[in-house]
Length: 144
Image (tube, rainbow, N blue to C red; front, top):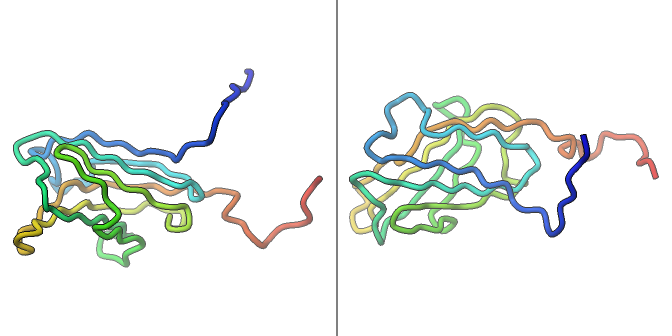
C-alpha cells in the first residue's frame, strides 16, 4: 500500500462530540470517548443542541481524573475555552496530556451571574495511548 503525501503543516488532532443537552450526564460516562496519543497536541470541540443552549456570560471547566474519585490529572480553567451559542472548544498542549491510561472527563458550565448554578454538560472517557516520543532520556545513540 502506498503512503499518501501530505503537503502543508501538520494539524492538531481534533476530538469532536455532538451532544443533545437533554440526553447527557446519565451516569454512564458515555457522552464522549476519545483516544489520543500521549505526545500529540489536542483540540476538543463539543457541539450542543437541546433545550438549554450555551449562554453569554457562562464560564466553563474541564477535568480529567483517574479513577473517578481522583486524583485530578488535568484541570482546564475558564480562560482556555472558546464558546459560541451551540459550541465549545479548547486545546491541550502535549506537555499537559496525562500519562497513558483511561481517564474520566467532565465538562462543566457555571452561570457567571450566579456561581451557585452549575451544570455538567458532558461526562465521558479519554484513553491516552503510549507514544515512543515519551521516551526522552533512555536511548542509545541516534542512527544517522
